[in-house]
Length: 165
Image (cartoon, rainbow, N blue to C red; front, side, top):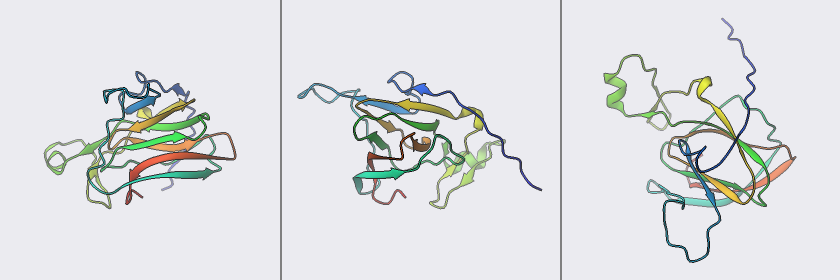
């Protein structure tokens, strides 16, 4: 039996600290010398070796058909130059093995890495527009598709773990 594909158009939401808080953080410039606080990226890089690099992406049009998550790490992304880009997002849906066994009705999947998750429903996927000198910190397990952009190519700062991919 063939499954039908549907095209769903999503209106982008401007990424602000308030609009993005369920998925992670929007990090904007702060004065030099300011003490560490809640507007700084709250990172979890404890499960491996951090990797910070410049990621060159090409031909990432404003559409996606798959979405992924990183169960062991927060991730930070930001365009070099503050150019406009987009990110498909859904809330984390990691579940522990006890929840999988005890709760009926959940359709949990075990990843190749061993963790369990519930795939996000299409209705729970949002698209955020990120513009200017800021970056996005994704909470551990946050579903994401992209970065997506209109240009032919863009460079991004990326902070994740060395074995994330």
